[in-house]
Image (cartoon, rainbow, N blue to C red; front, side, top):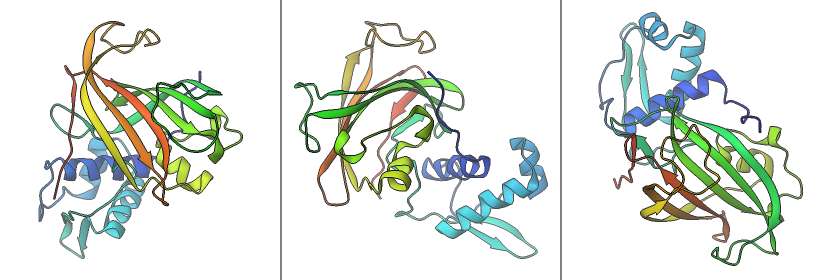
Length: 233
């Protein structure tokens, strides 16, 4: 199965920096390195970096002072496309990417909580990485009433961005239940914990802009590399 369409590089960088701010690795008032130096470290052009910084400035996470440089501005209510992605590397942050393992329209299992209308859902299985390290297995169920057809090439690495831009569906809030579980049999070799191993786990219900349950997911994460983080500000 092919990978998701990658986010534009400037958006990847802006999301990476936003997660570093959320993790506390970039502090309020901290001055970023000069743009050419920073672009060199990230392996991108200065133009791409400036687009990423402009994105952060628009969100209120960065102040760009003429002749002085770029300064972090922490906002407790700042939202980004990974606002609900709660898995971080043990060292904090990490850029999420995704590999699609399977995409199927099928009957909703009776074992899942109620979500959406009708009997069918889209089952999306993915392997999520942070800074290219495979960390999370995801099985997402989206009610088929939101989309009659979905192709693998339609999906973005950020499903919530895909929902918003393509389906006019906004996930307004989520309910997570965190614990432990065993790795399922469909896990790919790239996920280090083998099927049957005990790992971190959270089950999620996502609610749309009208406060209706739209999706549910099951998520297994490698605790040797990552952990679940929820910040209350």
